[in-house]
Image 1 (cartoon, one colour):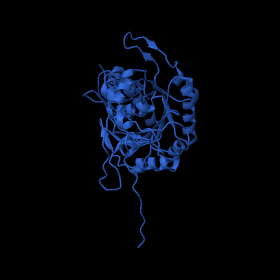
Image 2 (image 1 turned 90 degrees about the vertical axis):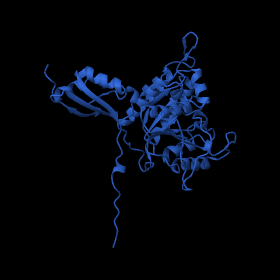
Image 3 (image 1 turned 90 degrees about the horizontal axis):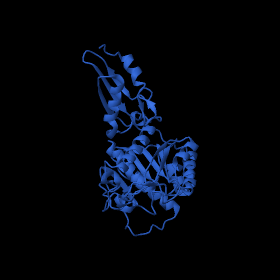
Image 4 (image 1 turned 45 degrees about the vertical axis):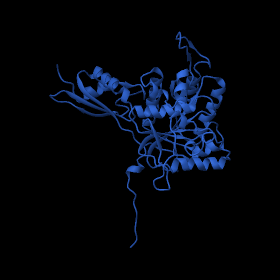
Length: 357
């Protein structure tokens, strides 16, 4: 059997479509190296997003396309551009804003599971609880206590399940109401974000407060966001507010990576029957309307709520279950779509200082 040439292998790899990007491996520049010789073909694939649970499947797809070959798959996450005029955050490559436009659609649950899924897929991930009035991440992550300050100026992030976290909920009593006006909220959030010593994060997920008012707009204008994710339910009322969130990001020139549909269907734990309690297809229809990507749907299950309330979200409570697989798929797709966007190389260039003698 004649060994394939490099050109022949490249032609075959053009037929391998990455379902997360929608592009073939050549077009998405995932093929790092191809080596041909007497020892057979060796192909090195480097994805721009974390995909630990999918790497073996991709390697099998490549071997099916080219025949016998040694295939290695790994990931390398880069920094991506943020809004013009805003400096990237030290210690953070990419910030992902998760917004809904309204409360009660499971945005915080999606946010924490997204961060945990990115971590499970091999990334260094963190989460900022930006909901000052109703912080929920401390309970969802099962974290108690207060963050330390080693230098007296900045806060060390709390850690849970290999995810770095910061929330106003770590600094105040759980039952204390935050009776603050908008400017105080904005200032507190900026401090939580910028005065936390994030440790070499690939992704920082920001659980945005509900709504599209002054606080949300100020955050969108001051936080260096690489991309946004809109969370909705299939219900028409939720979709109305989700569209407002989409328009808000559009106005401040933050790319919306896609839409996630929460509570997409209720699955009866006894008989397995599916019931579309809140309707069907709303998230996908909204994504299509705006030319955005539909990142996936998460079913309405009691275990999701119970796991979050118990401090062990579904991705860690049942990592091989159907719900965790759905969250991991959403995480891979979100990160993959971000990987296709323009990269930020500012951190790679040294600062030039001119001194006068």
